[in-house]
Image 1: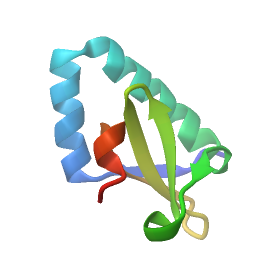
Image 2 (image 1 turned 135 degrees about the vertical axis):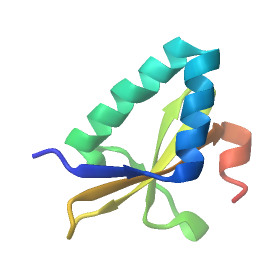
Image 3 (image 1 turned 180 degrees about the vertical axis):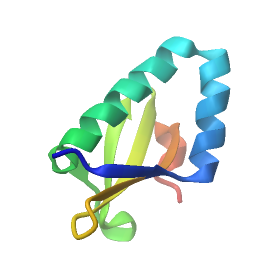
Image 4 (image 1 turned 180 degrees about the horizontal axis):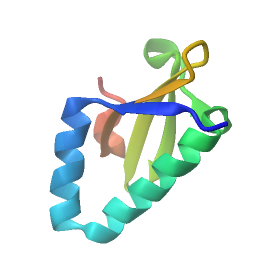
Length: 88
């Protein structure tokens, strides 16, 4: 059963910019979001300060998201370069 999903407003702005500048990357992101919604527990959980957050690589970017099992909700939080995303 697919989960419902929510995209944070900051991420939505980034996705609109990516769609204009690099449509192929935007399509890869869309495809990966679809895969995540189908099975979000497949992806790597992070640790320490980013506990309860999962990530997926879209070289050279990383998409981070959280999963609420009780509500069946996947919340997409941010997409940024690998070097920047972990410095939250």
